[in-house]
Image (cartoon, rainbow, N blue to C red; front, side):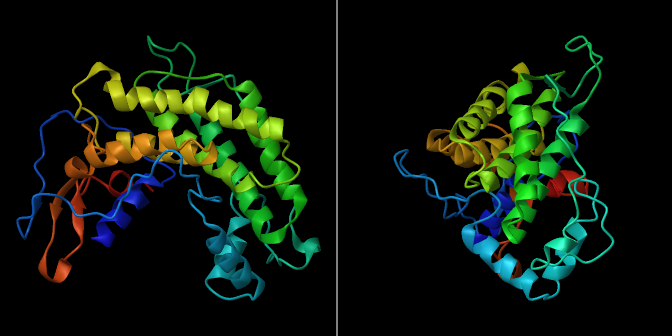
Length: 314
């Protein structure tokens, strides 16, 4: 059932999702065509003493080496994706191809740090008087991640510095996530984004040990605490009140924070909930049907048929 595991892990490692509550919180009994009583998987919960492998999260060292070689050789579609990276709003407007070898083609940094003391999603409410500002956090995290990727591929330190400038500024400025229940989407989505940017940058020599430790602690204090609270309390509602995209984005954040912070206990907490939790983020609740026959190993999730954003979290 490797495809099932891939399906769920792809959902967990995602960058954005729309909000939405389940107005009819009911138990969903998933079914298999062949009558199996459990969802087969190959997920293993490792002992907390087992060290994390870095880089982790979205990219392994092998992934990065492979992409770097493909880009350097100008091979499609890798080179096409590479050049697209430099033309999106989270990087810089560059209409010319970017060569890994030719530093003169590397566009300058366009995004600078713009941290806020609090991230607000669900503002102008009785829970938070200030208005929403969460898109700024999302865009800043995207930029830090994109600059980190560019540094990994080009070795150009201006991108490494641009990435850690953003990460350091947020880690020293941002103190909380505020809002109505939508604050939990902010905690999941942007916690995931910032953590994966930090994971790419962890071996940059220009990021001091004290700065990196401060970033790790920020991820735990601001994001993990909110992730854990949502997974445990669900804002005081029925455990199935929130559709799968809510717990899945928070689990994605917890997995990523566990990796970047070398906290396998946090990582294991997310995996345990994925396997045996009481929310729609649990495999047995978010997967509602497992197919057999010619579609063996494929599955349908609870968000299927709702819309693409909620079903794929992309």
